Length: 137
Image 1: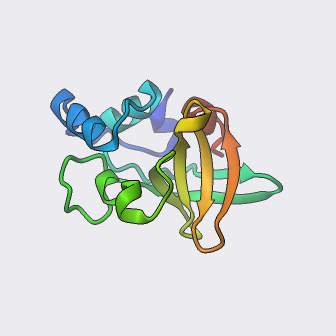
Image 2: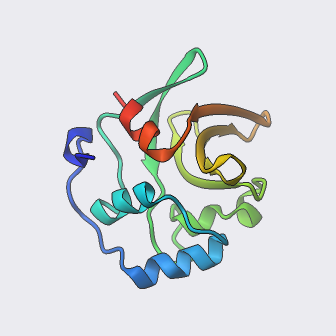
């Protein structure tokens, strides 16, 4: 995918060791398309960011920084299910403009879902991370 089309610049310090550490903490290997984006920009805030869920539209506010620093406030490890009160099946990877969590669902082959933690509502967004990225406008 051409990440420049999303308004991103290349800025990443993601290493294989960092990926292995994060995978160990998360307890699974995430989709390669997610890692590709993080290797391009480890804290992407795309300018092309709107997406649909159901009959509504929202936008990516930010993807969580891909870092092995467990104390980084907006890093991927700060949103581990055990720390964020999210069910183990979800891997939070970002937020939308309404502070819903953008998650990968382990139980649905890492489909992208939007989680409203305040109302315990889950919204299907895309079958996989690639489809999600292609849906951004």
